[in-house]
Amino acid sequence: MSITSKMQIDRLSIADQVYEHLRSAIISGELVQGARVIEAQIAKSLQISRAPVREAVNRVLQDGLLESKTHFGPSVIRMTPEKIRHLYDLRAAIERLAIREVARRRNQLSLAPLYACITEMKRCARKKDLTGLVEAELEFHKLLCDLAGNPYVTRVNTMLDAQLRMALTIDNAHYDNLNDAADEHEPILEAIQSGNANTAADLIEAHILSSLNSFAAAPGQPKAKTKTSR
Image 1 (cartoon, rainbow, N blue to C red):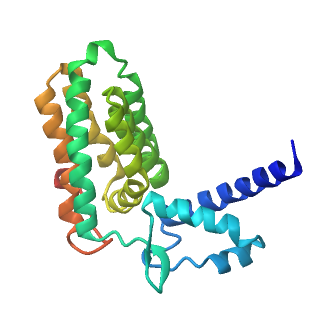
Image 2: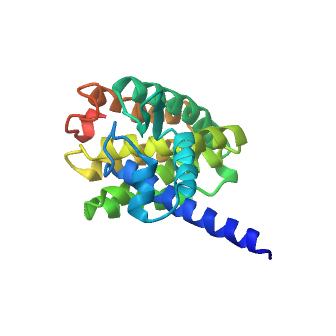
């Protein structure tokens, strides 16, 4: 290995670490919506050059977690009710397509990982672990898309991942009882197991879109939710 190659690998490793840090800070809310992301400040605070920071920022821009405005530079995306509506409308359409196929092919698939996700959601809810709950819920919906066997569904779902993490973190934080977030997935899985594709599709759409009522109350500040409100 040449010295040049070694330097390139080291630089990319630093860029990966900065990327993961920025992404995590945005999704968790540590970096608030609308906050400016200044490469020079990040590089100075981490005592590294600007090149890996610039690379990391560009990757976060591609994820849709940052937006860049002329003469202003990149800033954390504002998850307005309109943006969330567009995001959830697309998500609902994709998952309706996916779940119908999963229900149709249920006897050829292992649904055990979906049940495991619900179990993990309930475990996290009991511990009031919002981050873990969001991860388990995202995994449930990712598995649902993957099980459909449509590579385009999987690809689009992957593209939405980062912004969905932000939205779900805001959304699930406003449940009166986190167990309700887990419980909502049980009838969806029961409909799949019974092979009722239409019911499964209706349930997944209702599960996704009913959150829009609480998001519409105020940007980033959904009302407290109970099991019957979603």
